[in-house]
Image (cartoon, rainbow, N blue to C red; front, side, top):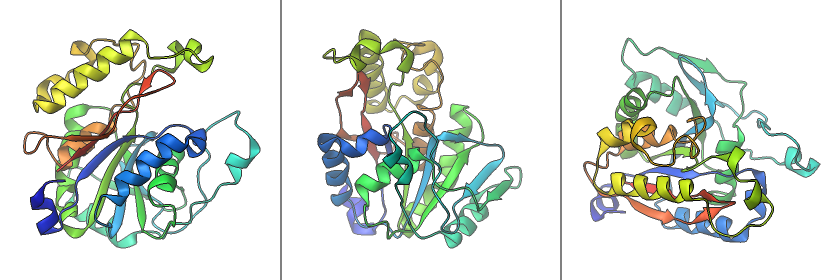
Length: 265
């Protein structure tokens, strides 16, 4: 985090790889996420955008405590019994609505709980579940639009709100069978996409990042569908890499997928 952020109380914006629920039993990754949050000022509230919720228009959920969404299949029973009873964030929801332009309507689904793209990493980073959490949907997967939404949300960082985009830097699940079987390393397309993304982030090349479908090596294997990369653009809009170089608190690969995570601002 930059000295300016510490002095002003401004929080950075984050993009992280959230993993499936078994992440909670991976001591290395859990430790990395816990160390990352411990190095940040304590947020007053968290606004999280997950790869697992696309809904138009922009929609806000979990404005009050409700059960979690167990949006995964075929896992052991105990994962469906996990709880993360964070407080709701109705005041943050009001602030988000106030920041949206007239042509960007905001809907509410107060009975929708946090999905695993939100609660799995939050269990690692803030296990006491004592910080209000609000989840916001992605209305579409257009990088420029998501970036503009992030720009609208940026003032919340000065109010002690931690903005998190939760996805996965590479997410080619159909192409990693050998890594599920224990093969070491990572496939070339995953490494190439990760290195390309880091270079674009380091240089603040937003135009290249926006055009990742055409310009990124490793496509479409790295992202057969792009919802796990898309939350990055909300993060970048909230704290543009054009203003400050990013940090990478978590790097490396899990089952051949890049778990690179980004802190900006």
